[in-house]
Length: 158
Image 1 (cartoon, rainbow, N blue to C red):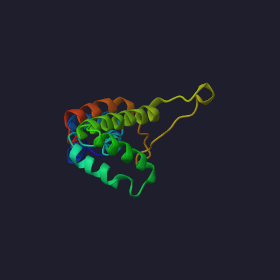
Image 2: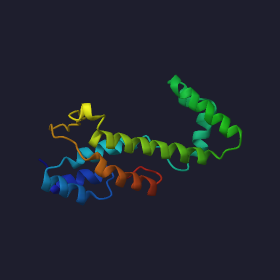
Image 3: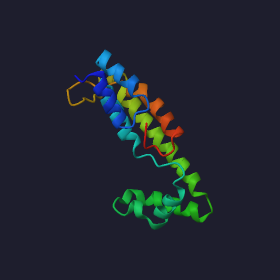
Image 4: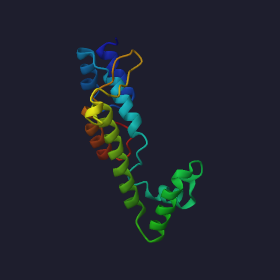
């Protein structure tokens, strides 16, 4: 197990805004907070940057998002129609960002405490870190990290 000081440095190196808080929890409670943070950061990395409307408009108009993945073609086509109708590209980005963040929250809550139905009460997802510790509590941290994402539009640091 890493020392609190080592953990703080690791959290800082991945852009955590509260490295001391996360590191203290891992060091004192043996909760794999670094793994939790990294899983959520990875999930949130795909969220579009706020204000990237001009860049995204070009990609939507050129169909470059669907060039490799045909299931994106409908989204490209719909975005192109909306742009052609005069919708502000940043408004489209805001809609997409909101849905992306909602999906990340849904996945985090699903991994944390989702019950399919009474027949599957004993069924649960489990993520393990490299040391075999369960990475739980994603639902406890996802809202905070999403709020930070929305307050830091570049989303390069959490």
